[in-house]
Image (cartoon, rainbow, N blue to C red; front, side, top):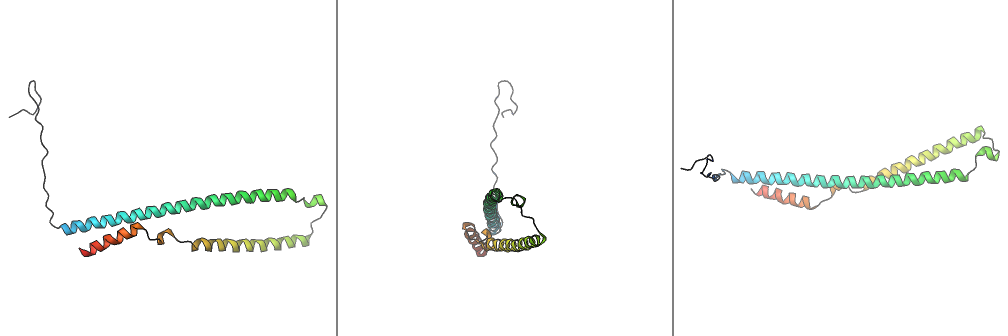
Length: 150
């Protein structure tokens, strides 16, 4: 019998890995469990895809808002440059004109709020990525049918 420890003049014996056989008592249950796990993983992939779509959409909206804000700021700066200050013209602001200005600002604020509500409504009308059917839904349905067949 060969020695296990390497001594002078002896070789080590390499052991072969033992082959283990497993017997499955209920292959149907195992198959069902594997199918359920694959369904869960496909659903998770679908959720990940939807999250990425939402992030992309969010980034696009942020860029659009930044662009619009910058444009508005530039336009207000140009407008302020074009219009002279009332003191330069020699106009004294009276109480009546102050009241008119307040009324006009309230009207403009109401219009702005109305437009903001309309914008929110139009963004809500866009299709949600969660309502869209894709290849993951098709695969999930197929796997669920297989489970029902077991």
